[in-house]
Length: 461
Ligand code: NAI
Image (cartoon, rainbow, N blue to C red; front, side, top):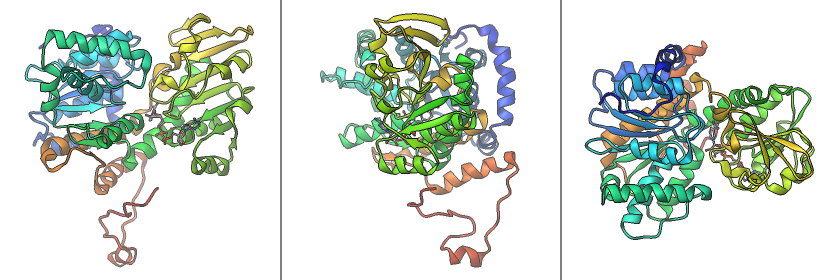
């Protein structure tokens, strides 16, 4: 249906299309899937609810799903991450999309609701952080008269509950019917994957799920090399601060932390790391970073959380920071920094997604994207090339769940290694990498076949 969208300005579509055309040249995995499956259309009949940052790269993903036969409705998974020209280009192509950069929380959940409203109802979810899955499962629980489980971001709880109530009143039984029609979900990120395993553990996962994040060609590339480029990009666009010589603290040294520390180090900052896991702490130390307690590093200039955990930078930390310290988060949710505790302080908005907050001591702090993931709030997220690897996994996961979902239990799965290797292989040409072919003697000597898979399941990369 034409006009079935909410975007900032449809006139931005032409600009969006130009950038989409450029992005396609950097997304060889997605373009190869269009080539491979464009005629057979394995997603014909799939009605996919997408909840993932509405960027230019996501627009290429959406158009790939459509080229493979799917019907798609889309919302962003974060209030600040939409690129309005990307959303406009998608809307102009008659694909329903509901996303505006800077939308309110109420709009966020309303737009997510709208992305479910296919005439025949959806049958697939493509999620980033788990909000779409959470919405339908919480709603179905509410319809069954059960208590709605507490949601991780507590300040959003009231908004989510209100949206669920609205939908229940408008369409009784809708959540249960929708949940029962879903054939599967593919999940993009670490935080959403945590939620899925939790549901599986509690016997509450009503459909199969594919954990896209833990494809090697996702988390070891997007989370790491993506953040390596997009973290400093976000800080620079927000603050124009000189990074060289400054002291930066990165909280967490998982995949995102590794990329973030490398990003800041590459810009010339002196980087310290905090960690809770001794393995990651040792990795950080042996990569040359000082591993410290946050309490001992509060005289730093820049603080970045990357943990996917809550209450990492707390109010007592922020009160001790020096004047004009820069604080931001690149993890999925905003609860890594205790932003709620700053609400009664004096805020001065500098520009979109940049605020200066005055502490009782008189020291000021620069907070990026109100504590939401700053690489998408203050910049444009990861470059297309690395997102091509992530999204090629997403498309393969959607094909797998839609065409062979009946062969899966209601559990969380990872794509098989030969597909992971295929995703990597599709990206080699663009960077001029040449692959050595194993002889059959060499292959059998190391216990593989010349076509792969080249590593056992337990290999860690
Ligand atoms: P991970 O699990 O590999 O790393 C998180 C690390 O934080 C772990 O090593 C853990 O030990 C550490 N940690 C936990 N609590 C801590 C504490 N209190 N102090 C210090 N360290 C602590 O997870 P990954 O893949 O690095 O993802 C982190 C977050 O980033 C997730 O929320 C994920 O969804 C998100 N993400 C964001 C992206 C972006 O573009 N902004 C891209 C990919 C993931």
